[in-house]
Length: 286
Image (cartoon, rainbow, N blue to C red; front, side, top):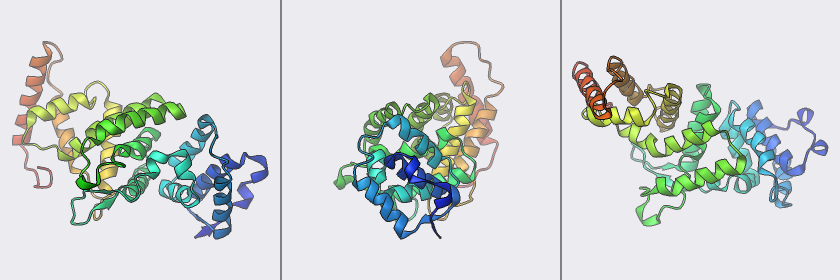
């Protein structure tokens, strides 16, 4: 649906660069697409250089508005269409056209996958840290050596300084930075977790903050579930790894917090092993 929210927006009252971003956010909130005249107007503002020296502190509220809209993919699509994404989020823009591995025979385009995962998170009413993590957690994959594609070796090492720079640039909240870095290092590990290795599962739960930062752990599970659900054929499916880790976490509930770290980790691993052996799991979990 082509849409031009003239009644909600006035270019004369807004900096032209920020006006582009606000229009993209308004379109995402309304669930519409820009008509050709509007997209041309946005493109002209970007081409005129109005976003080149825009203050990131002023850009961030518009980024937040687009991310928290019901259709974040439409926000990104509009920004791409007029060239604004390259100006304000070049690390994200660079993901389009880059292939990544999927469970199916076909590879996925990282940019398209990003938009689908953001929409999946929006449908779940995800918080800003969850959506921000999905936005940035793959930025280290944009320049993986072509001879290795669709595999992305050492993307975590490349991604970490980029995420930190983006957070510093926009003065993003600390919880956004923390969850994004955690998702960068752990999301793919969570996807590969198996009930056959209770010891590593116990260590993973500790790394993910399941024992001392339960809210962050739940948010990471939502990041992983949204990423999982963005693959073809998975929309609406239950994320099996979250169920597996939740079972492991419950198994550790009675483990005493006293004693040495080694003894506590060993007790947790034993409790998890017992729980896993007492349950029957489908092959997709294992």
